[in-house]
Structure formats: structure tokens, C-alpha cells
Length: 560
Ligand code: ADP
Image 1 (tube, rainbow, N blue to C red):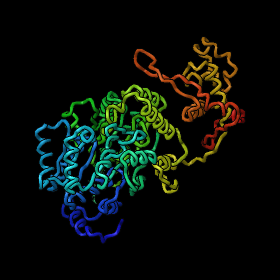
Image 2 (image 1 turned 90 degrees about the horizontal axis):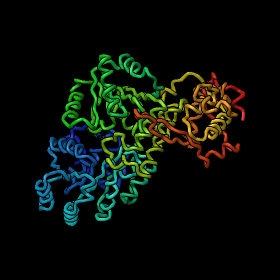
Image 3 (image 1 turned 90 degrees about the vertical axis):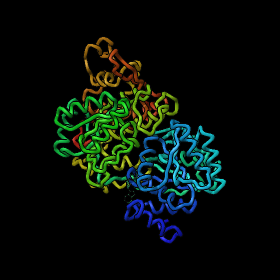
Image 4 (image 1 turned 60 degrees about the horizontal axis):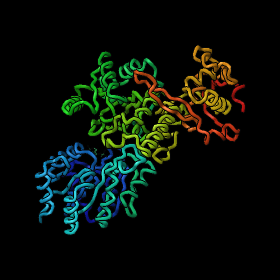
């Protein structure tokens, strides 16, 4: 598809320069355009900032009819239309909250002999709910004036993705109604299962897939244990490495955004906060200050993301655990779009995992701008997917050994040789050697202990009993009399808790998360997943973990 002798090639190159002001094409742009202009269904995976819009805007310009674009957010659509109109490309959009007469004008124009628009943007719910729109599309189709259908942010179709939107599922109707029209699905994030889901739900036929490496060589990734001094650490990190430069700090809750911004201001940084419950004027004003460099650090929930075209974001810090690897990758992707070195730091604590899990199951977590509100509900499969995605994130953070790039890219089904990381992640930069240790016995003891305390206590408590604590609660519960009380007295606390967390990641132990007190703090009660635990308890499963070569696991406890 990279050939340069298609009948449209000259026009394509001329318009790319003249209308869009680009001197060349970016990787895969020409190929995608050639494939879609040849009439194929095409699926494009291209990282944020890769230049997906051009792959349908340029064809729209040189084809005779109208390109229909389905995009998830009105504000995103408005932003695109503004840019198109500035380049003198006639474009319009239809949305349900637009005045009816205006919608009528646009629909009438579409069915007139000389349709004046090259691109028509609509939200997915408009396709699902507007018969008038479908009638006009049929009319265009009959007159051979429907050139192409574009589904932007196509991963929203899939329940396995992190931004599922039920309205996207009804888009399958487009291929049924307009079977001969090439469909172009675009996304910056999709695992193999999400891709399969999208191809099936949209009914893509013999589709050609373009995928680009999701590796971002200019970003440096690290995970840092989150302690009480986290804010001081962030302050020092910014002052030492990115003083007066631009950055985003992603926080879990609205309250966290405000607190973190305030603390940074006290430390002398130009920081502001951004979240979904601010009124639109306030949000617009923060975005404006940020784009004019009047503030350079934004403390935000994931709602801050759309329309961040700032090329010089030098750092993205996650103040708490992101809810999926896909989301994390996309959020980090906002750093270093100009190709310059930038830092991505994640502050991780297991208690944040408990918090996020609780928020997910109560629908109280703020979603990225694309996800619909209904995905926040505690509904079966969505909740299950969310929990699975979150556990993968925990496993990423707990991994102190493997290359971070490798771990992220493997998630997107991409092969990556860790040697190519060239020490640009924390794990690859470590100097100590690592040794595999058999921790099966520790794991067995912990599972047995969870049973001995009748599956009514938290992980922290189980660890205390394991390590032989004689504190008042342990004594009151008479758990100091248990056979396994103190069985792990020679095991370092950090190592025992790592094994415990591994058991949760492997779903051998399950966490039942509860709000524990009047102040709303959450805690988790450990249960045993009998189905998965039996192999371990019966001696058919071995558990190996990697430790730095200064091994803290004592010999007597590591033998099976
Ligand atoms: P995506 O949708 O993949 O995140 P966009 O389509 O918004 O990316 O493009 C990101 C930026 O790259 C835009 O500012 C766009 O003008 C610019 N861009 C796209 N294609 C090219 C190109 N061939 N040459 C130079 N700049 C480009």
C-alpha cells in the first residue's frame, strides 16, 4: 500500500501540502489512505498523536461525496470541525442537543443535489436513535455520494476495552445498510481481544489491519513505592529534573486533584487542578491557562485527556494506580509528543488498589472523556473486565524485574526485545542481579492461614499472624494459638506481602472489599478461591518469584 502510482497520488500529495501544510506523510498514513481509497475495510492502530485524522480527512477532500465520521464526544467533534473550517474544508456535525432547525438545515443540505459538506460528524447515539439521519444516509448512498464511514476511537465498541460505550455497539447497522461503503476504524489503543471484538461488532469484511509499534522510545518509565512522603518526592523530582516544565499529575479522585495541586502550589509550582465536577467555564479556563503556559502542572482525573495537543509535556506522574494498562499507556502517551525525552512515573501502593477496586464497584470513579457514564455501573461483565484490567495493572507495578516497555507492549500483542529498552525504564536500569526463588511454602502457609482465621480478616492482619505478632487484636482473637502463628518469623515483611499479593493477582486468594468505618475508608477481607488453591495446597503447583540477589527469604522457609 505504500506505492505512489495510484490514480489519486498526485492529488493526495498536493493537498497534503497545500491544504494541511504537511511536507510528507507520517508512518502508515499513506498506506492507510491508499487502502481505504481502494475500497477496503481498514482497521488502524496508531498511537495518540500519530496523525489518524489525516487518513480520512485527506481522502474526504479528494473524493466527490460525503465522509461520515462517528466520534464519541461533541467537544472533540467541535475541535475537529474548527480545524477543518480553518483549512476551508466544509464540515458539519449533528448532535442530539443541537437545535432541531439547525439539524434540519444540515439534513436538508445532505439530500440536496449539491451537498455542500465533505465531512459529516455524528455521535454514536445519533446513529442509534435518529431515523432521519439514517434516511438521509440511505439517500446519499443511493446517489453514490456516501464515500466512506469512519469510526473514530473504535475501541469504545468493545466491552473488553477500557472505554466501553454501549452506543458504539449499534454501529454494526452501518455495514448492514451500506455494505459497499469502505469502513475505516481508528484507535490508539486495542489489545488482540479488543480488536477482534471491534472487527466483529462493526461487521468489517476482509479488513486490512495497520498497526504501528506502540513503543515510545523517548519516554522513560518507572514505578515508585508510594509512601507518606510522596508529595515531597514529587516536588524534588520536578525541581531536579523538570523545573518550570510542563507536566500532568493524574489523581484518583477530585478531592485528590485539589489537594495535590494545593500542595504543589505551596512548594512553589504553577499548578492547577482539573476534574469533571468543575463547571465548564472553569475547566475551559484551566485548559486555556495550560495551553498558554500560565500554569505548567495540571493535577487531573483521567477526564483530562481529550484535546491535549500540547507537544512539550515533559512528565506524566500517576499519583495513584491507573485502572488499566491501556489507560495507563494512553495517559503516558500525552508526554513527549514532540519526540523529546520525557518521564512517566507511577506512584504505587497496594492500598490504592483497594481504593480503586472499591470505587470501580461503586461506580464512583471518574472515567476518561470517551467512556460513557453507564460503564461506571456495577454491571456484571463490565465490572469483571474492570477488575481484571486493574489486577493486570497491579501485576505490572509489582513486577520489579521485567522491562516496563516489554510488559506494556506484550499487553498490546507486540513483541519487544528488552535489550532495545536501553535502560530507559527502572527495571532495566537496576544493577543488581536477580535470582528465582521458590516461595511455594510461604504461599501455602498464607493460604492455610487465611482459612484458619475463617476468611474474616485482611491481608495485613494475616501477615501479622504469619510473622508472629502478639498484638492485642491477635491475642484477643486467640490467633497466637494457631499452628501457623509465627511460621513466617524469618521471612522479611516485604517478601511475605509480595507473595500474598502474588496470590491475589493469581486469584488464588480473592479480596472482598468493604467500607470499614464511618469515615469511608475501605478494607479488604481475604477469601480462598478453592478452585485455584487446591493445586497449591495439594503440592501440584510451585510458585517462583524473582528477588534481588541479596536474598531476604530465609532458606528454611523456601523449601517445599
Ligand atoms: P491522532 O488522532 O492520531 O492522535 P492527530 O490526527 O490529531 O493525531 O494528529 C496529531 C498532530 O499531528 C496534529 O497536530 C496534526 O496536524 C499533525 N500531523 C498529522 N499528520 C502529519 C504529517 N504528515 N506531517 C506533519 N504533521 C502531521
